[in-house]
Length: 221
Length: 269
Ligand SMILES: Nc1ncnc2c1ncn2[C@@H]1O[C@H](COP(=O)(O)OP(=O)(O)O)[C@@H](O)[C@H]1O
Ligand SMILES: [Mg+2]
Image 1 (cartoon, helix red, strand yellow):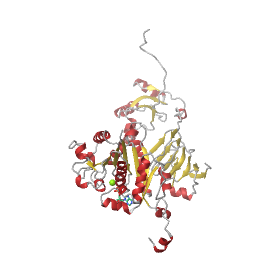
Image 2 (image 1 turned 90 degrees about the vertical axis):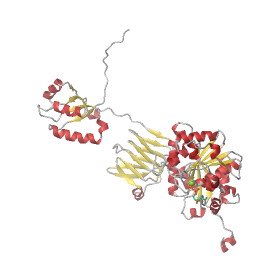
Image 3 (image 1 turned 180 degrees about the vertical axis):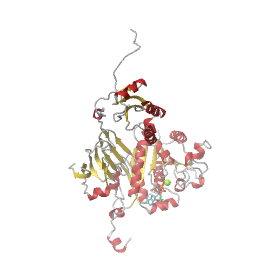
Image 4 (image 1 turned 60 degrees about the vertical axis):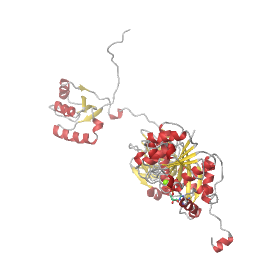
């Protein structure tokens, strides 16, 4: 049987959404350029959907915006949440009208993964558990760094730095069999060695965030 | 198959060259054909410790550059027929060491020798990386003080990530701790870390503890590896370390403060 030369299949993609909050093309250009200057690689050639929910003027210069984006090598694939008049304009210049699903909460959740390291982390080494917890079966030496978006569990002595909740998770904790750390941090709140000593860090313990400040409690490990 | 042993530390002045000379001599005295290579290009002091500095004609870099062959550059030890030295160049810079060049020389040596000892320069730059890259075994030379222990930890990280064995996913480099310049009296007073402290932090098997000893200075001034001085504490400690390297289990000596006898206590030593 001959394979059909066309096939229609459903598939979902993650697209970046650019929110436009001004009608002034000069302002938009300036802000865009300063953003691009910070992270040029991040945006280069990226397909974008433009969200126009705050634009209440039906004579918005959509073509002008498209030119600005295109000239900076951003690829605008469509617009969303715009006035009917702007939608009509979009059609005429070949842009898709995209209905966003539910709000941001519906963004596909990254699957949580746990990283397990069965060795001593030596001075100068860095381990990062993205999107999940980090379990170290071994010691973390002075000058070594362990980082996790989730919690950090160390079955050994923590002598180096440990940063949990690196992406902002305030419920993350750091547990270690023995805490002699250079630095511990949860969601950006940090303690240095002297803070740990002042707060009576127990030989084995769990460091948590309570409100805006860190606490340490001993654990019978 | 030859075994390549790197004597490394990160920190300078901890006793790598002293150790390389002693271990190489010890292995050769036990009947194993051994070569010791000076990777400290530009400084060159292995040949002094080995007492062959007046016989250096060609060096390691000459061999790498194809300006001399191995037979021309290897110096046969006067005391021990199974021992050879490949000296470093004093005049060239460290970039003379390339992975290909070092690899070729080590391969050629491996055909002829049982043990290849690589005396690493300090630091974590090219020279030190070249010395550890091809290693099967690492003797991590450490003094009982915080900065040396930390540098050793750093080197252990390098062995686990930057060595050939790590890069190719082979069996990892075998790591041993050699504690040198150990002074039990200063451990008691809290000026130095104890054997147990260092073992706990670095968490690798202990190959030996070499005491701080006058014999080392005397030996290096006369160009005789300290292990030849079989009456000395450091000589005996190195000899134990060689035996352990060859698989023997021996108790550790010179790790306790010497109990002074009654008369010595009264009259001093
Ligand atoms: N066990 C020891 N007791 C006393 N002095 C020592 C001992 N080991 C090394 N030394 C001295 O320390 C200095 C540095 O030793 P060396 O072997 O050249 O170190 P490295 O090669 O690591 O730089 C030398 O002066 C040496 O004599
Ligand atoms: Mg040296």
